[in-house]
View 1 (cartoon, rainbow, N blue to C red):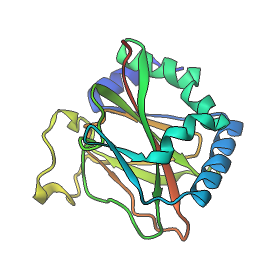
View 2: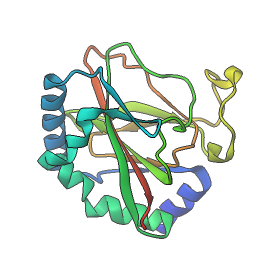
View 3: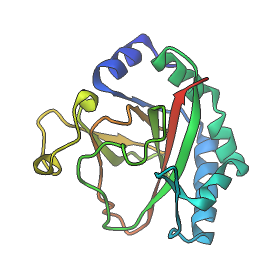
View 4: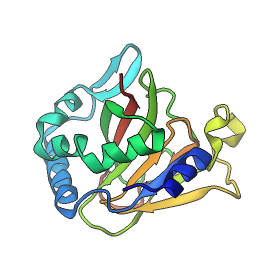
Length: 202
């Protein structure tokens, strides 16, 4: 599914946007299941494993939900990541993030605090109920080779930054240490994102 051009962009810029990697039915089923999960669950108790943030303790049950199980085993995604990395990868961490209205971590950051040992790839999905594209991430191409942003750089506007608009069928695949910033949720509803981290398969 992914091309040589995609691989070259990933190696150069540290990210690609994979359009329509999810089927319509899977995107819809994920939204329905995620809505049920979040309506029945308190988002307060956080889980840390070996000092690494792993979301909320209930998240470890996500694979027991049919749509999430299908996503975690999705050949198009697993094969695409293997193509980008040159070898098979395996899922090591996932978490579902709920962003309330008028909230958002707009500062530049790397996923160092949430990064499990050995993780080389992050996949970001927007869980919502339409195929309309929404602002989701700002990324700074090629920044995976940089150190963490300084305090002065956290809110800086860079001339070469890229704003990514994605639908509920799109996956952003990026290096976890690529500089990126989430958009503030300017809607009146909670926004859900799913983050998947992969390492090279043993």
